[in-house]
Amino acid sequence: MKSLLSIASLSLLLAACGSQQKQAEQKTTQKEVSPTTYAETITEAELKTLLYEYASDEFNGRETGTEDEEKAVNFLKAHYMTYGVPAAKGNNDYFQKVPLEKLAAPDVTLTANGTALKNLEDIVSITAMPTSQFSANQVIDLGYGIEADNYSNYKNIDVSGKVVFIRSGEPKNEDGTYLISGTEEATKWSNLRQEFATKRDIAKEKGAKAVLYYNPNIFGMAARRYGSSSGRMALSGKDNNMYYMLLNDNAAKAILKTDTAINNAFTNKVYNASIEIDYTNKSEALNGNNVVAFVEGTEKPNEYIIISAHLDHIGNHDGEINNGADDDGSGTVAVLEIAEAFAKAKKDGHGPKRSIVFLNVTGEEKGLLGSSYYADMDPIFPLDQTVADLNIDMIGRIDPKREGDRNYVYLIGSDKLSTELHNISEEVNSKYTNIELDYTYNDENDPNRFYYRSDHYNFAKNNIPVIFYFNGTHDDYHRPSDTVEKINYDLLENRARLVFYTAWELANRDQRIVVDKAE
Image 1 (cartoon, helix red, strand yellow):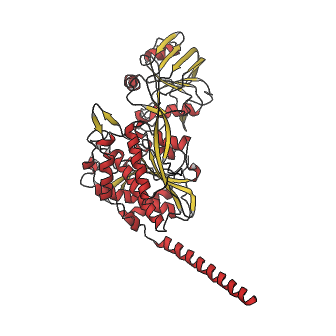
Image 2 (image 1 turned 120 degrees about the vertical axis):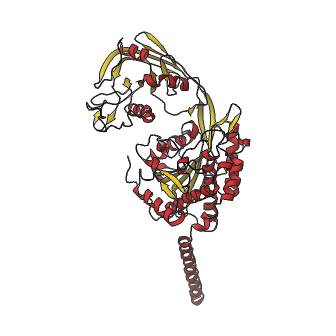
Image 3 (image 1 turned 90 degrees about the horizontal axis):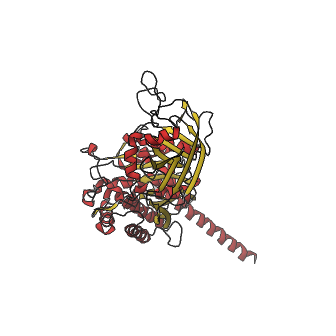
């Protein structure tokens, strides 16, 4: 018995050693495998085949919340299943339902000191609110409504639950320079693209119940936009609890009880006033869908790299189909090809250490709605375990400004939150793809504000590092002429491979990247 037991023990010991050696060999092999093996499965031929179907007339422009979008999400699901990329939610459930409202101009009356002000005539209601009523007996005149390091209209004033009145613009010094910047360059507080949202957001953060924004220069434009039911949408159930209204001269004078012109006040003032708001929401409920697939990590499965692109476009207008081949058919098919590459690596025993999430979002064209729903309301995977978002929105064309110098891609956001992410991006590109990384639109003062205009921003505002890959706009942007034959498939291939290589590096590093610039 003793002899037989010793032999058995020896056999078990040898088997264990053999198993450990095999595991060590597998780990060594995984570390030594070149990502190029899988990057090269991303080909212009396959991208072209996918895009010729996805951006065809059959999908009728993929407008959010329509049967045409349903065709698009089923296309994505079918390909993920074919490629062996599981659903993020399991059980082949690739869809994340996104509750939406198709907006219509609400019935709104703002009664100020006995004067009834009508929506689209004297006021324009900007933010969708639930049907509700509100009254107050004071208005806080906040001047410009600015909160900056060297100038604040909120100093020593509590606006929580209050009605505030703000003006467009920002203060200047006697020499004509702007007080906040100290230069002749306007800041986000009066830049038309930024002011509208910046002043709203700080007031909401401070707890204001209603913001009455006096900007007569854009009143007519806003009335046309918000008075139309031209497909505008919002997330249903989002915590909209602050009225935001634009005023013309008549409304501003009624609220401040004056017959004179409204001055650009530098000091704050509290007015006794009778304010009543009666709001009736007339929106229509509908649903969109995000499509979410993932490849589970082998060593750090609870850390996630998101690769995102928006699946929607602007639909059919007046019988003309907007196929959106570049915007964002190019990003969508790139995500599919990248997913297939990671699935092949996993099948070969070289799966990424961290999990890779493939997030195709709805409603980008309606205001980044699908990504907002994922990030703000229903993250399938915890945001605090989300390492980075690599967002692809238009990577199949050439910016006219880059004609003759086509081997480029615009990168936006790579250095905003993580120095390490930016450096990794640069190193990966130098090692594998040698694309010129153009940071033109990464400038803080970029008037286009592209950093805020695609789905990555909903992750960045949650302090998740991002990179936005973008080829720039062109004459076919948001037009029926954005079609498949105009795509540069060799560029699409190389740009998609760059995203793959970057995701591979982020997923397989021993330590997750450091967020050193969190706000």
